[in-house]
Image (cartoon, rainbow, N blue to C red):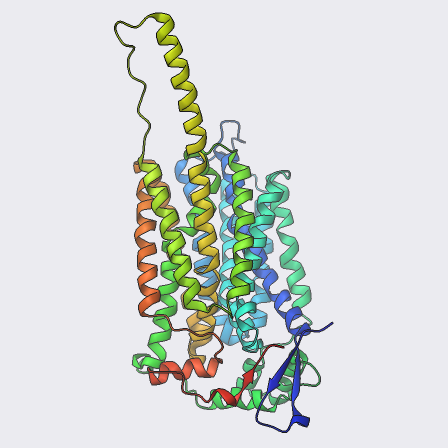
Length: 505
């Protein structure tokens, strides 16, 4: 049965229209398969990298520390390139076709990874899957925000993050039983399925109206909302927004309604990556191994994947109830507590056992030494769970707020006139930052251990908390036009709420 949402306007009761969300959900599902592939490819290195750095690795594919660092971080460089490409493609061919185009580098990349016989094939394949990830990260949130009505936009806006987590969890689960070459082959399936489904999905009504295709826009909106939906009011609001837009110039970037939302989006994506989420996910098994976690690292990674899935599901259910800012506050605090614990834990080193007392008998000392070893083993077993628990809390906190809400807010607050280009810019900044922090993470790990990167992540979590308090507006329950008007006035949401109000039934 379709989920229905009544659209209440100041019109006679007989002309009230009803929204049916089933086809909207299908369109969103088709698009976010690209995010499933993104989450899958992002963490591909976690179970695979230990195989390439082990002593019994294939000599043609064996990696030293520098090569392993490049294999882990070059994905982010590819994602930055994909974000740049999306800056052009989003406005040239539209959001839907941009998402579909991402399947090309994804498929080629997985073919190279699955059939690799030399290191260059591994690195190029990893780079191309990163290009696909950057393209989807820039295009999918914008497409979803433009086809969704504000009654469900918060929940649907978290779908990219949820499906990315599903993709990562699928990789961790398959990595327990499937050889690494078959892991790459399996990654091609969601990308190809995405293309097939998106062929039958409509383009964004906002995009169609901007091209002057009013009839196609009306057909697309009615397909998304249901045959009984009165499209006139929503199309009029979108058209009014488009008519009041002019082509963005450098001088216009100096106005608050343009530079403020762009800066908020860019800084949010920068801080999101500086929390260390990408290197933690990319090197998860390596981190657990160096942390002396008492459970086998590959199972730890699967546990973290399950926790990520649970936490983004919680975030999706609370997005339109608790609000964006409340979840960001909670997210920042949880990440801060977890990263501070990881910092202190990584800085603590056990004391070596002291020499035997000079007057102790051999039997007495042996008994004392045995009890001491047993207590130490018990202590180490309990202490070995601290990195796992702290990492789980960190991932939980991130996936509740700074993961999905950063994607959602980017699609909500960016000015309509620059949304395609600005979303590509945000993704590019995000992945260049991810490349930098992922590459530097390996160098810091080799030189100072886990203490140095964890300390950096702790400081960034404090900055996230402050930035949310000072700069980020609450967008819950607001239309895209209301949000844009907020930045234009700089004071409040001034559009009359009765203009277009959506309530969930």
